[in-house]
Image: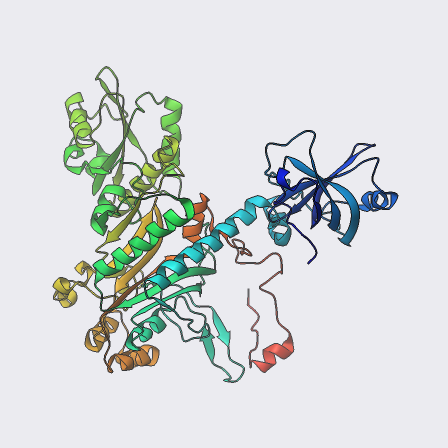
Length: 584
Ligand code: ASP
């Protein structure tokens, strides 16, 4: 061993002890007669000191030291004259008797401390240096702790951790596949799993009963703060269960993780139908840390001569508590905010319900105080509140209102980081109509079971069929989703048909699953949590990048190892691939 203790370990009770430490030089302070070094490792920082009693040899080595040198130091623990209350080792220091440079360091491109001077790109390029910083490493430690909690809970509940292959045949989860050419099978490709969906279902046919895996999944999608091309799922499947059993088990897992890792007790998770989430929160991932529900004003606001409203399919609003005093500047700012292309509203109507009971709106010309009172009633507004109203086509307007609600929640400080409000969103539609291709897509995936009571609608009104599908949502973030599966080959074949697969296509792509179902498939259901999202939520972060050791940037690049990168002509030849130059 290169050390007797770590840099975070020594305390006053060790005073007088001879110790050996090893770590990185955080900084050197040369005060002439005395020199101080902050020595850092994963566990903390310990102060080393050299003074008039220090040997010439040590002093010489000291002069060579720079930031991030790796050194081994021998010395005696002594009490510090000026104690540092901010660090756990702040009561002691090490009087250096021997100092050895184990590895010198070039000048690092940014300072490796909590408040670094390094910009985002630079820190990504030198990610291994960024990971030396407490703030970043802490997130990865939390991640490890959470993975441990998940494993202990699921293992204790009889789940078998099973690996599934990474080179597979495509599994549809609604994204593009990453593909891998096969050298041994010229002209053929593997796909990287978008999830282990089919394999976990096969494990149920295999009688595993309860499966889980903390597993890498790959989806070739445009990236956002909460998306990476490769990400990690806590993936699970259970046999002989119904929806309620899955919800209860994974509510249990989530509560266990909150308690174990954050020591937070969360309430029982409410269950909200998808339609309620959309109508009242304007989102299928409602943030229920605050109210400010959406309300439909179509009936109240139509037919009074205001063309914008009269021609709208839907008029809806939210009530921002205590905001009646908003200035013209503030309401203009909100109007511009809803008009941004990401939100897409044409304009914003507001009504101030003043403290004195009077009502002042941006559409006073068309609506009497009584009209506005009726709106206030519907929006449950009281004196002092501000009503914000959008109109237009129903779905986009509801979505825009949902965004406006979140924005107001942010502005009013109602979305507090340390508060956690999980819920289950249930009863998702089975199918989603795509106007462009004029066909239905599976809202979750093609293996999701319709609600038995809705099966009769499959032929007549497929768009109305609800699924036994559910999402776990925490604080407006979709943490996970799953469904009860179809385990009957006939119903599965029907589903493929509705989704536009010919029987031949279905056989070519999913034949092995359909075959497996012929040999006794148990009823089964499952779920997958986005592990990166869960960790970033626990860590109070907004981006999943910060909880991944080596993430990719928004263009899907790893700027540290500069990938993706071209491959050699020989590699291409071996794979029987030829690059076709793009014609501009
Ligand atoms: N495979 C699904 C997903 O990745 C989860 C599930 O249905 O279990 O979203």
